[in-house]
Image (cartoon, rainbow, N blue to C red; front, side):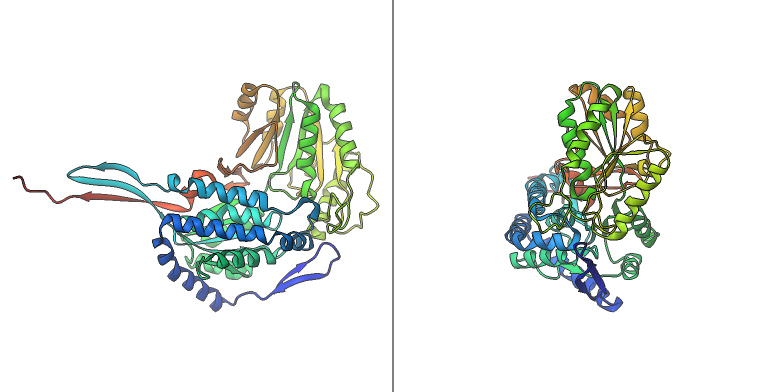
Length: 460
C-alpha cells in the first residue's frame, strides 16, 4: 500500500494499493502493444495531444494547488507549478520537429543515406515529490512526443499527481495504455527493470535510489537518466549587486522549505561584503511566516515529512556543537516535527555535515572567501554537481569561473531555475544523462541509420 502522510497534521491523506507483479507485467505488455500505433501517428498529432493534456492540467489547478499543500506542504499562496510545467512542455513541443529531424547524409541517384531518431519504446519515469509536476513533465512530454509509451511512477508522498496527469492526458485523447500512472513498490520496480521491461528509465531522487536503479539495470543495457542529490553553491563576488544576490540566494535556499533539487545549500561571499550579506539575509529569513500551507499568510510550510526535518535538525545541531553560529531563533510554530524553523549558519567549515551532505531543507551555511580561487575550490569541494550560482557584474569573469566549476549548470546573477532550452544535467553523485533541450530528445530516442542503395536506372 502506498500511503501519503500529510505534513500538515500527520494524518493519512491518501493511500493506494500497489500493483502485484503479474499486474505490473500486464501493464508493461499493454504499453508495449499500444506504443507501436502511437509512434506511427504523425508527429504533429502527438505534439497537439500532449499540448492538450498539458492545458487540461492547467484547468485543474484550483484542485491541484491545495492537494499539493496537503501532500507535501507547499503553501497555496505560491499557486502550484503550472507555470513551469507549461513552460517546459511548450518549449519541448516547439523544438520537437528540429530535434527529431532526420540527418540526411545523401539522397542521390544511387544512394539514400540518413540517420533517423526512433523511440526507445516504453519509458519509465520515476518522479519525486518536491516538484512533482515539473519534474515529471521534463520527461513525460518529450517522451510521448518522440513516440514512446510512458509509465509514470510517482513518489509515495505525492500519489495524486500521477492520477491528475493521467486523467488530463487521457481526456485530451492520449490512449490510456500509452500513458499509464502506476503504483509500484520498490521490489516490483527493480524486477521490471531487471526483466528489460523498459527501453529507458528516468529517475529523479536520492543517490541511494539511483544506485538501486543502476543495480536493477546491471547487465540489461537499459538506458538510465539520473538526477540525484545536490549541494548547490552560490558565490557572491566582490563586484556583485549585494541586495539582488541576497534576495535571490536566500530565496533559493528557503523556498519550498528548502526542498528544491537546485536549491542553494551553501554560500560563499567576498569577505568585504560578508557582514552586510549576512545581516540582510537574517532580516529576510526573520520575516518568514511558518505555518499551515493552506493559510494564505504562510510563506514557509512544513517539510514534506518529519523524517526530512529530523535530518536538517541533526545537521544543524551538530554544526552548532562544532562551532557554527545560528542566527535565527526558533520560530514559535516549530513543533519538533515537520514544521521546522529556517536557519542561517556562519562560522561553518567543510568539516561539518551541513556543508557537505545534502540537507534538502531550510538551512544554509555562509562563509567568507578572499578571492575567486578560494571560492572555486570550495564550490568544487563536494560530492555533488547540479548547479552553481555566480554573482558578478562581469560576464567574462563569470564564464571564466564557470569553466572551472564541476557542475551541470552555472547561473550568473540568478539561481534555482530550470531553463528548458538548456540541458538539465549533473555530474559526480548528482547523476548522469540530460533532460530537456534538444539533448533531452536525443536521450529519449536512439539513432537508427539507413543505407539505401537505389536500383540502377537503365540508360536510354
